[in-house]
Image: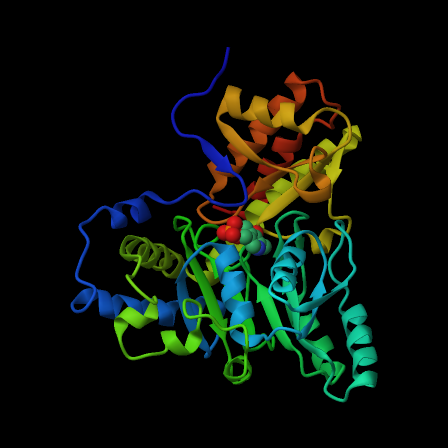
Length: 398
Ligand SMILES: *Cc1c(COP(=O)(O)O)cnc(C)c1O
């Protein structure tokens, strides 16, 4: 027997639920790529992507996923043999760095672990030591993810930017905002970020297939001598006058129509309200997990509460099989949870709360999780969903 019908609740950390308005915006004929409204659409999107990154720098839209945007950002500022420092706090910055290593960049990892955020003081100390061997420092760039989607951590990008400056180091600060942009505050210029990248399919509520990169003047200066540049990713090529050059070929028209609608939805709601909605719904999830944790079989992956991000919660499961648990939620109830990845594979599940999410989706998901915990007899504290409801009710007044 199952109680599954109708729409699935997709609670994985990307791709996320695409709003009906965005789906409808894409259901239209292709248009001319050399004249007409597409040209203004591109200009508006480049401008509004910069608005979401909160930068006066340049933006680039690629036909790619996040991995492509990773490669775009690396190839435009680095050369073979350059050294970079990767700040570990889960899987993703390390994955980005691994791509750099495979392109001939020398990568040092500042070790962190799966259960905590990057410590800015450790970044400062490492960069100060680096400057002892070379006045400006030997590292060309520092790579970090704002949210690591595997661990569920949020890193303090502003403090990391300050740490780099406090060390007097010249390295570019490069930030992966794939799992945070459009959900949590991001202030590229104010935080001293030189290169930021993201993708369409998480907080930005569009289908997978678009990668975004933003670069400030320092990054564009480094670009001039970057040896890893390739024709497709190259910023200079994309800064050309011809509309065709903006995409190094045919524009991904329908994805652009969808992105336009998704950005309009974000701006209509207001970015501050969007961030607040994510904060409230994330805290509702945390209230529930906090109650369930009293049964001692499940608990938060991120130990320090202030380091838990507002877009995905990684839940450790010490008793019971997370894959059987996820299968129950999916097959019996139509809720699709994320699985543990990296060293958390087989030990955790993840609840995404990013993008087009609202109270019924989150409360429904929490209700199903609690139902599954009971059905599979996984020890847990009772009242998790109720705690989420009570807390949201206190926050969202009549
Ligand atoms: C999803 C994700 C990526 C990779 O994006 P793809 O579109 O799957 O290539 C990179 N970084 C972070 C933080 C992510 O969450």
